[in-house]
Image 1 (cartoon, one colour):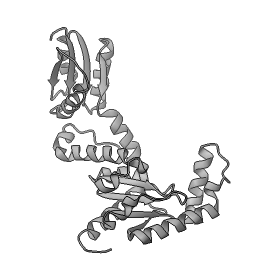
Image 2 (cartoon, rainbow, N blue to C red):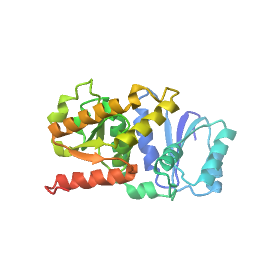
Image 3 (cartoon, rainbow, N blue to C red):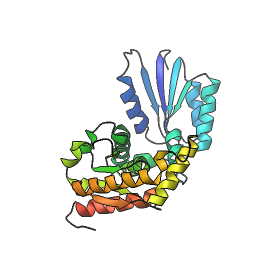
Image 4 (cartoon, one colour):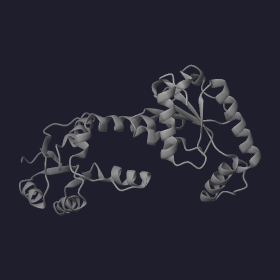
Length: 273
């Protein structure tokens, strides 16, 4: 190994994911004499020891190892040698475990087995974040599914859940005082879903939200009059658009997501649920 700057990819599978990340990052820098070295199918501490025995110079370590024990060992070796260490999987996996309320499989080579499907999911998640909460109304035309609804109707978590099902989703918040984007009336209404919720349930959710922020729970945001106004506004808009209405009351994100997908598929094949 030379004494130049090195990016070292250490993977328990093919290393393709880390290689793709490396390629995407390199284009943002004017760098010369950069060595990118990939070690794939690394499944033991002994193999890691062998890699580190030959490392010289400045090293940035990218890892896509999923086994926690082996990953911890690799990180300890990086700390011992003062090498920069980036785990490309652990943070996304841990966040997803909390989001889906289940443990990740953490089996070697699963990401490689998923192949193109994996990268489609990543792309869909990036899309959902880019067009979340009406940040860019161009998402209305570019998306597969458009979610619209008043505050606290689970638009963002639904967008992310649908992204993991390979759907490009944007969501738009509805406020009576603000005109909705005209783009909502220009696209096919079959891809738009209006979210609705029971008034009492919404009142409870908003009060809890205000309390978590240290705001008086009797603020207008959670008042019955305000909620009635917003729900009536939403229903009237859904009628004008001609979109499918989905009630999210007392449903999990996954249950609502499945309902949206079912209706999306049937509506777009001419079958109406």
